[in-house]
Length: 376
Image (cartoon, rainbow, N blue to C red; front, side, top):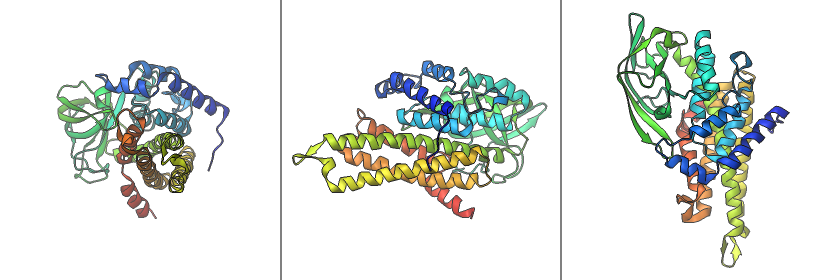
């Protein structure tokens, strides 16, 4: 599959490519990651000015109406440049949940600040023993007058140290693994009794372990219907997988290009290593893996845009297939570059780390292969 982008979509892609080429090269990215904050507010504001933060949202919500295809274009280009700013967490995850599940008042209050880049959000759903299951929630939310009181822990919340707001899943009724009874809450990151233990991730980003000790949240901050958070998170997961697959495709394309160029320049036994047939076969396999991933990613995003009923199954299939393909390409790129492939000075190792991080977000390839099989 090779979709033909509209003129507006081509302009969107061109504007992102131009900005990243001029202002977000690998050296600039390394400087950003090395700062205390670990991300660039200046670049985030520039993304908003380019319309990237508003691109996926419906026009009725004040966005540009680009939907999942706009997200695919943005994330693919961000994957090429290893952008660390929290676009997935703020726009795709939190923004998508607010647009889908939020009340009109919540959409009016929250979405404009996401679209203009003035607010950073993230989603806190995973727990230490939940693995990839949205219904395995031990964090509780009990009513106290007009408020809810949240208690529990959340694990590996990407972007939490940067966030102004968090969307937190908590159980309002039922047992630890009941599908019904999980609710979503908008929580201010600076709320009393909310503690963050921040850390750097292997791919250069920032995350945190969250501890909520009787955090009071107004009832008006309940996102969506009480007890129906799992269904909202499942839709969010499909959208996230589509975005992550696009990011992986962007990273894979850079690794393939870098490997090809290196094979032409690196000489061994008096000849460029690219002339060795065994390495040519390997790079052909890398190319095929990329092309298959592009096709699957486009198919998934088109299906989500059309709201086809098999979108969730297709998302699991794509996450498994693209995840394995991306891991293969990353491993081969490192091997083709030899020991320098994992050095900090070369970008190949950084793409390898990012791909491995993508593979464990919202379910690794093995988990989604099993999930795909169970939906037959």
